[in-house]
Image (cartoon, rainbow, N blue to C red; front, top):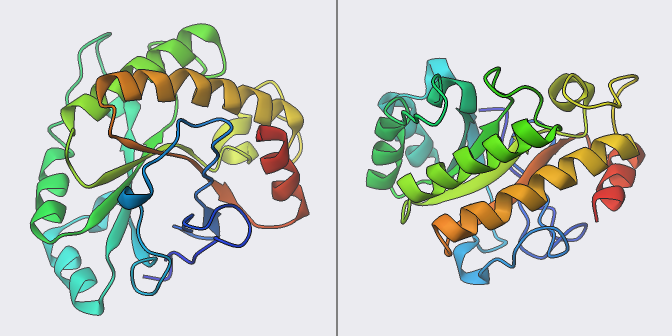
Length: 222
């Protein structure tokens, strides 16, 4: 449970939360459709605290412990390649039980819509970007009404999670090229998701590290 959220309201937005190891959920009216403030948690403890789940610990026993401790949200990777193994055919069954169990415990879910799919190639190219947006829209439609914040990618400012995708794949990340490529993905994805469910809440990808490089990357995105 080391990976938990802390509020970033002073730096980005009044109601923007941190989730995961040193990860900021970046909310931008400039690149994301406006969110309804009522859908976001109050900027108080414990509403702003949550726990990162991995495949091996996303079980009911841990969910019960999370509730007992007082956390109100969990973050989990929703892996595109695992849901679409055939073009245009989506299988959400591996994630449905987690959503159901979280709903039963009144836990919010931050669903990190993660990574490229080899069926379409890199997400920074038009084909991959369009397919990602289509999948994300199907995800929003499938989980319409569920207590989910949909997060576009994970740590897109880093080489580990974006550099192998984008043209700026040298160094440690936080490049202007990363920002351009990622913002293009956001601009393609949000309208598709909002068309599928106008009331879905969409977050930009968690930022790895809060230091001068990542702040520059955020500014490039804005």
